[in-house]
Image (cartoon, rainbow, N blue to C red; front, side, top):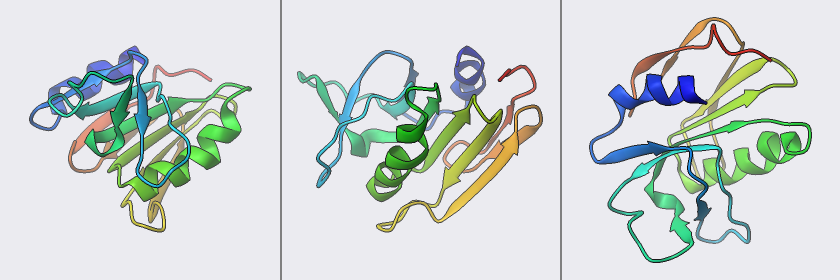
Length: 139
């Protein structure tokens, strides 16, 4: 995750910040809240006095799977984040040794996904528009 933070930081949308800090995001119409492993959000929108932050402030979330969280990360969060309109969801699947980049959110969920084995550089779309080197990420 540190590598991801370092690579994303120069490409953050205006007024957004990247964090690994534990935060709980809520989404309208969803019964669950999620705390992503890594999140990029509008800094101003998240400066509130609540333990539940607004999901609409997110521009990117990343999850690093573990044996206990893999199914929630692969299915529940893909659906929630896509329907909520988060532009980019990065799923680093440590059990499969892969990275999936979900993009083009819609009311039906993400419309595009690109899965690669860890190792190559992948390009992240807007609002980041930057390369992401996964060569030092190990499964």
